[in-house]
Length: 210
Image (cartoon, rainbow, N blue to C red; front, side, top):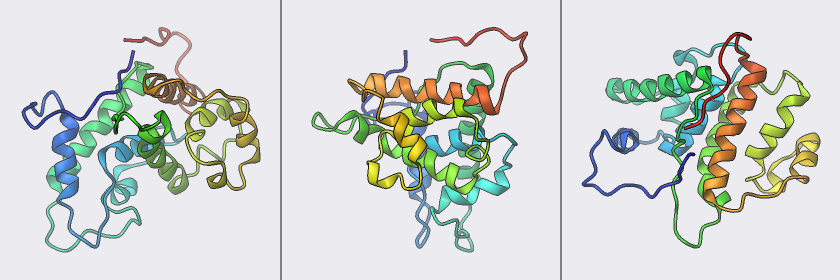
């Protein structure tokens, strides 16, 4: 089962919290660029990986370092940042290909925060990927509706313009009872979407859950 967790303290090692080092690298991107944070990045990478055709890093990396896709300032060395992002991309790619459950970078905000508020950065990153690369949404397979609804239900209904079919499905769903359930729904939805956009060979073993 995936577990939502508080961000670790500074005493925790990079190996225990690989996102912490990556967040530091993202924070180092100079203005006017506005990079994604690690939670939005995680959702964005899943959205990229679920496209029906492979999206090359050269096509999506610029959206990681600036939400508007602007070029990095001259002289900024992004090698370490790009390497760290590609490492997370590879981890997610393997999990999705094997239908193996993974821990999305989703964090508890505070005791008063709702599950939707906690997962919203991840969901926003996922939605940004689908906006930039619309191949998944153009498939039109009805099997995509439920997993997409489980993700997009965390948005306000007013934010889902021109998505009547999706909203109809969202209206039939119960919101997650807690953050752990919301996180599980994100991962399950990623796997269900992959079954449509990235189908596995019939001889492969069924999905595994940790």
